[in-house]
Amino acid sequence: MSDYRLAFKPAIGLYGQHDPSAVLFEDGTPVFGIEAERLTREKHAPETFPTGAIEACLEFRDLEFTDIETILLPYDPSLRSRIRSHYVTDALQAPGLARKLSALEETVVSECQSRFAPTRQVERRLAEIDTPVPPIELRAHHRCHAASAFHPSGFDDALVLTLDAKGEYDSTVVWRGDSRGLTRVRTYEHPNSLGLFFAIITEYLGYRMFNGEGKVMGLAPYGEENPDIERTLRTFVDSGADYDVTSLTKRWGTGHGIELLEDAFDRPRKETPGEFDQWEKDLAYTAQKLLEEIVLDIVRAYVGTVNSGNVALAGGVALNCKLNKRIREATVVDETFIQPVANDAGLALGAGWSDQKPSSVERLSTVYLGPGYDREEIESELQMNKIDYAEPDHLERYVAKQLADGALVGWFRGRTEMGPRALGSRSILADPRTAASRDRVNRFVKHREEWRPFAPSMLEEAAEEYLVDGQPAPFMVDAFDVRPEKAAELEAVIHPSDGSTRPQTVRADQNPQYHRLISEFESVTGVPVLLNTSFNDHGEPIVNTPTEAVKDFYGMGLDLLVLGDYVLEKSAQQFGGSRRTDESTIDTGDETRETLTRDAAAVTSPDEHLLQ
Image (cartoon, rainbow, N blue to C red):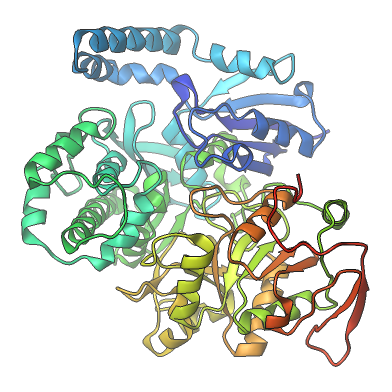
């Protein structure tokens, strides 16, 4: 009989405010996992208890709570007492007497709950799903981040770094990982927080904390060395392995730090993102430079202490792929592993692994842990809603030809990925060879800033040919320089300013359908690479269901939608195919053509009746 454990990260009360998720472990292996935002349809699902994610985990194996051995929460509120005085100080600094009293009352209540009833709120919410509620065990936030990085890394030993805004009391932790597990080596306590430092820069530039940090990273290469900005920023930041950013971060949130920057630079924060002037680009460049400098100094200081040249990373800061590149390229580093679900959504993975011996956890090669839909489910929905579709004999070959001819394709096949990166299950795809392709995706599909770069998916065996120091990189969380002689073939997926790219390498055993598509594209164009970006419109989570995929297809400037084994097209004639109502043919690239008959009426506009 299988042993089932449910790990989930709430985003309520004592357990943080963003990125809730749930993962089902069967005999120690994660078999299903999903972020709550995919179900709530609100990015990061703030202030959310992941009821839908928990129910999805149970439904995957048709379980009830009586089948669950243990529930694991990746946060131990009792550890908050380590920085109780900081919460009190924050409350006392609130503006106005009424705000002070309210903040103090909230702090006292939270501290009492943390100490005397840390799981009561969670138990109440779980009881609304099913009863009896299984035993609940608490795991420390940063230990779960560390386990999510080290246990599936495949390393026998490693320096493990966990970096984020804040756990219970810690913001950056240095760990030793070995056969015995994880040992805490050094702790940088909140508010000495690299995550909060970068969040302050992010909000100063007009983006939102926990959402826009990647955009600031992408903006940074457009900047240049600016001695005035760097001199000013360093008055708030002591770098090195003994870093200190508390001048900016000493109050929770970003408001205090932003006010300090406004005064220091004599320049107000940017209210909304848009076009950036050179000064703003230079600020992003300098912030990225200081972040890299600090983390590299920590790595150099501690690889000797833990006696390992392997480095494993998790925590929200570890999603900074330019930082990860610098670490990988450091002379003291042999290999790196970055947890692809490095943000708080990955805590549920770490909680489930944290009690296991690292050697018992298989090396992570995919994160296709979410829901999938079989052909009968998809076909039933399409027919019920009278949506025109076809089933080519050689789907990957047909789609590859359309991509080579300029089509923009929504690709919805297999199980949903966990993490912020689309990895060939819920992706938007395009030809990677021209800047025009990149610009079309930005303008007509993603509806976002045109300066932002895209990433490639490439066959793993092509990594050395296209990338400097190319190696397997299956999760799109590391950056590489593109070989100059290959840059012309990858113009749409290279950062226009620094010539780097953030690749996903693909093997047939990881995603056979996606591997076939890229291989077919290579047979047509000679280039074993596709532009791959997440299947979502600007500001929304990645699509999770066929319904959402179809609605986005008709609401975005996509030409084709691949939905399982089926193809939907808006303007098939433009790409050499043909549009069906009751009966038609699709050119599959062979001399033969398949006649396909379906009882479906043509749909020509994205009315709200689609897949309701």
